[in-house]
Image (cartoon, rainbow, N blue to C red; front, side):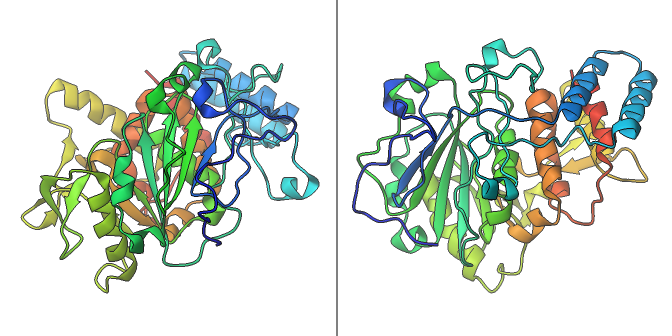
Length: 404
């Protein structure tokens, strides 16, 4: 992959396939950026339309209507009949950018109708799609071809915090990393000065700011990145929390109990260890968090079924998500180990072990059901464990019905 040049200190303003639109600093919805060789890129909303297969559209509408029913048997039987008649998986409709060329369609470009959150009536896909309602673009790619080995994509949910720490990343890291900030925003957010990244000063590391719908929990951004960049992942994808990550030890991948002054220290330590350490180069899932007795705390910090009411409610939600997503002889577990603050590196092979539509469907359910999204925080180790077999998508619809 070609590295960005330093010829210009400014990123391109958004250029729509049809017309130019205002830039980020003005507070209006920017257009989709044409990715060129610059250090900072902004991928935002543009004028797209969606061509949804009519049968799939009707099936999804029926599913969302059935979601309101209180009788599970009626819903399941009806869904089964619809599937048998159509042979279409309504969890995975085909979305096509109306400006796509024939070759782009062959690449299965996917654009989804994201309505204005204030007007959203829990129907994510509408038959009466108009440009005014079709503001949110699902499909974004940070690169057009697979990146070479020895590279890490660093994904950070962003809430307009100060990002001056990027300048502290050492040059050796800049050549082997890409930073992607995912901002859930609406037009009112974009009008705030702190939500307009300073494009006049860039670092040497390739950086993207991607604006997503202001809907769903932060973990949905994780699945959004995976589903949109599935075919062009780096060797590792590193997920960091919005606030300060845990400090990494320079001797090993085991974190200490102290927190960093900034994200830069974690990145400067973790990226070389993941790519070049003999100890960790063969690992596929690297949780980064405080350790207890020299063991990763992900096997010690758990949601137990016997805890107080608040935690028990969380446990029930996690257990419900687990039993509908994964094949297991036991529909419940005593505990669910998890990664606090969603801070880990994962090898691309572990992501590719799951089909693309798994990540797309999880992303979509996170958008429809906030509580499901928060439950997925506790199932991250399961998702990246290839020995955990997943159920058929027909059972996933129950998660929507039981959303509360």
